[in-house]
Length: 89
Image (cartoon, rainbow, N blue to C red; front, side, top):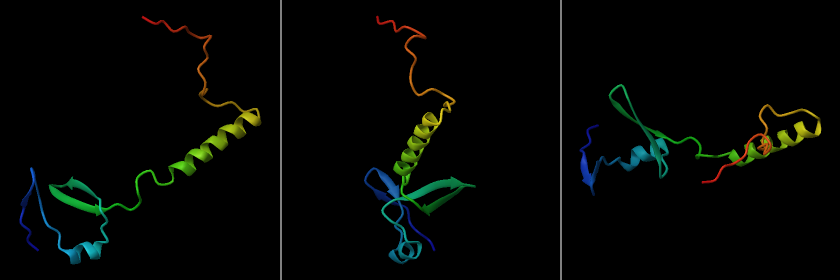
């Protein structure tokens, strides 16, 4: 299928026919990339940051369980103020 490049404000673009949008189940946003001199337009499989809240909660629980079991974190989550002094200028 041939498509014309058209002016859209200060940009340029192509029109994607509705039947193609329906077949691909595209939403409001898509992922675009250039690979091997070709433009690849893909559906976004999951919304950005989906599941982050659950992952952060799980990580927080993990930290709490480490502290309660006497295990230490690899990197302390608190700044030890005795190690250095701040100098304000």
